[in-house]
Amino acid sequence: MSHLSKVRMNRLFQHGKCLDVAIDHGIANEPDFLLGLEDIPRVMRNLINAQPDAIQVNYGQADLLQQHAGSKPALVLRTDVGNAYNQARHREMWAVLHNPEAPILAALQQDAAAVVVNLYLIPDEPGIFRQCVENIGRLRHACERYGMPLMIEPLVMAPAGQGAAYGSLGDVEKIVPLVRLARELGADIIKADPTDNPDDFYRVVEAARCPTLVRGGGKGEIGAVLEKSARLMAQGASGMVYGRNVYQHQNPARVVRALMAIIHQGVTGAEALDLYLRSE
Image (cartoon, rainbow, N blue to C red; front, side, top):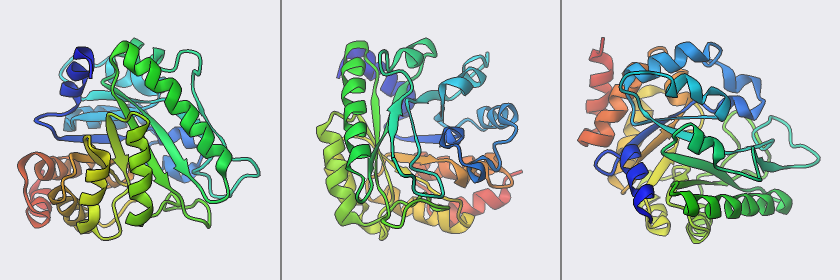
């Protein structure tokens, strides 16, 4: 890893740990993903005040973070768009880079700390898998040239298609090979689904051989989310990339505070829930 990549990684990971709050869901073109994100400037202001380690957005919203004059979270920039998150399976599944000719230009312009891209494994859809591999190849070349950390999001999708739960699976036997592939393709950071049994997540971390962040998925009950998050951290996760489990809760700042305590202070799920309930 180049010196510049290490500098950016240090901005993203505080003492090797990171809470990245994802609000890049508008790119999915799916209405229910936008619940809680209707007023994106307000959401961004509230998240900046809550001070997670990073905020993940698309190019068109990154200015809301980067124009903030004071202390602010690091920027993680989404680089791809596709139709895999829609409720109905499409006749043609696709995933493309925003700018295939200069895939990280926007990230450099916006002073991002990392870029993120999907690696979809969808049953009977080899075309979208190949597109993802090609996307990663273009990104890896540009990231290496300009010292930009590459986060790959390997997703094992359910045979039934998409839906409210993103249609992804927590089957450790399927997640581990895809995570290994993402590492083989040059991931600096892995963003992976939690395993059905959180105690199996160490296998994902071993396959990644780089900082491994847990993907959140759909909104859950806060106590269960915090308990599961603590168990995943105990298995070697470097942090979380949570979206709806933060921004769709009534008080996202309190969720951020509880998750930051789990990630950076090593508190238990019960202790984090107590902190959440006592926060003003």
